[in-house]
Length: 141
Image (cartoon, rainbow, N blue to C red; front, side, top):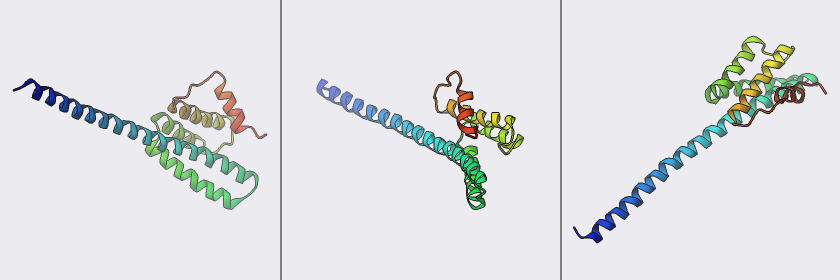
């Protein structure tokens, strides 16, 4: 076989293998991006539902409270399906042990959910995060 044919075949083989590797790697990255987006959306939905329920209860708006309760149910289902193990476990623990933000212990369990979400998003937990989050989300001011 002439050297030109061998060089041509090696070049074609390299292009095919390179393209295949790029396709596989790209597919995995896209799947990871999609999964991450679904998780993030579920986490945001849970937090939106919690804050919406609290606002509706403060305003004594039963219609909005029902709507946010439905949103909460959807968020819990999404977290059960798509959430990380730590987020799903901390969310389940909150609802199993408390179900409402009506005590300091329930507030701490809620903060545990946020800590798990932050870990899952690869964001660093800084010193004081738990206290800051508690103040931001659970203070009545």
